[in-house]
Image 1 (cartoon, one colour):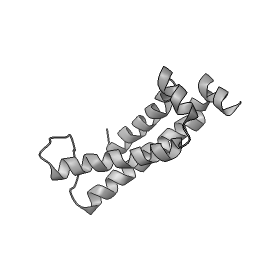
Image 2: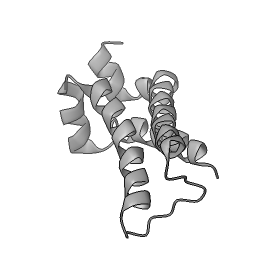
Image 3: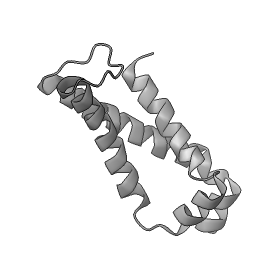
Length: 106
């Protein structure tokens, strides 16, 4: 499975889980900066993963990861793929869940 596919799957799962986890969904429903927070997390997490794989002695799985500009660009692209898939999953599936319908008034 490629990094892009994993990012897409994680993005979809995050979109679903923030609407399903009981106490978290209540907090998330009232949180104003949802998209900006998700966007930041989806960019920061793969970039930190890249930095851990390239600049520390911590052994993280990183098949085919290059420790140069191409590697960090691919980390950012992977984050964008994850973010887009989370927003796509919300648009297609998650917004039809009861919590999202109640919040959006539909």
